[in-house]
Length: 144
Length: 144
Image 1 (cartoon, rainbow over the protein chains, first blue to last red):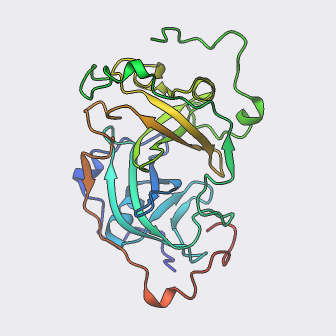
Image 2: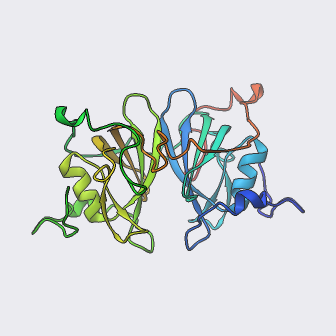
């Protein structure tokens, strides 16, 4: 288990990446974790620069745990590790998409995903037939 | 186009759902938007209670736009609407998974997803062979 919560001596996140991040008031960005082959969205966690650096360089996902105030390499306690396949930053810098191979369940409840237990009742929407002609990519203005 | 930014008179989010939400300092929860059939993660947006109420009841996704300080029904300007298929809340209440049918591209850049343009270099991780026996769901403690 990775016991140290301090950054590896002398290692910091690539400043070119750090400059792109739009952090919240706690210095964090959102990290969406997705199973690389099935597409299941497993969970959403939070990362500061150091958690992101570890995720990019170690092959394993590390989050910042807001509840415990420490770094948390996913799976160190449970065995349910997340092995990194790819990481991408979104267009405005406040969210990461981390595609992984998840061992077992992602959720502390034992569920495969953190979204399994609480579906909400939602009205379904369908493309109106008459909108198909107007639905061409590229139409519209910058803020869509 | 839905012009009003005020809630429909007398309508509020189901209090039972509102009570489950863990909002940030701005009163928002994260909303992961995923294409329902292909599994593509399209974008991450932000919702307050009213945006969530509209998303649950209208068949279309509505976000709270932090940059413009107003409600934003995705697609009203671009034609690239998101038609709701399902909504789920995560285990700790700070994130929603909204599965949709996305018309065209989700990103203001024209890309299909907001994660297409900025991949980050990441070391890939693989399950160690010797860990398979220990990787059984259920082993471990509450905070995994």
